[in-house]
Length: 352
Image (cartoon, rainbow, N blue to C red):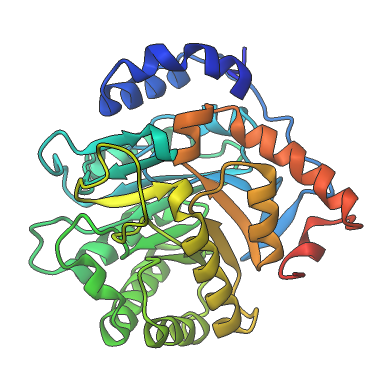
């Protein structure tokens, strides 16, 4: 049985009685226990091609939900068009001290300062190798260890290890919870980082190399946006993922509003949409964009697509609406396409 948003609302009080991190682990265990199933939430109208990859529908799971690549296939079976595991680092790391994950229920938001907690590359490789040959688009989001002496080398190592098993590689330089990581969005550092990742990927790729996507922060200045857009063009990146969590704080009602970390969920919606439009303008539509941040309905996803996103990703909204939300949004997108006179989703991208 799929836990639809309506059914999820019945069990949510019991889940919310647990602390946020325990609730998340419970969700992962529940997905592991699901019987194998093939997704039915794909139609010719919803299909879209990005960076040479054929996505059955544009709704994906953002990195952070399935950090260690434990449940990519159950997520695809729920109707998501793709999923992204990670962020993964070369060595295991415990992340920041607990508590580090907070539900802001009144704001339909989440604050996290997880700090790239994951079991490391070797453990994830076992899982990725085990699913080799299975259908479905599974991206791998790569990062650097907090105490690394050479973070660019960490990214290159991760690209080398994960290239044979990734539908795409997502380079995450936008988490606010690893000190100094966002400095890699500086033009010079970012150019060197992307060169290192591409060189490492190409050294081990057999046949078609997975495209490289770049995940950026919403808290960028106009000059940063222009520089990243130039690099995306020059390095022929497969897509820009716009965006990660924000360190800014709009007006919030929750008692957790002052917690340190990255804010996601509904309060991020306006900023993430604005940043998507900024990157659409900066790239001239020449680089595919993936819209992330505050998407909780088909209308939200449609607005992001009309603003220039070829794909969208969810995470925080599933905390409040359950894992069936992806399929619900995909169905709603088909309805909105017909309403607005589009027969193919690709034709709606950037049409606002």
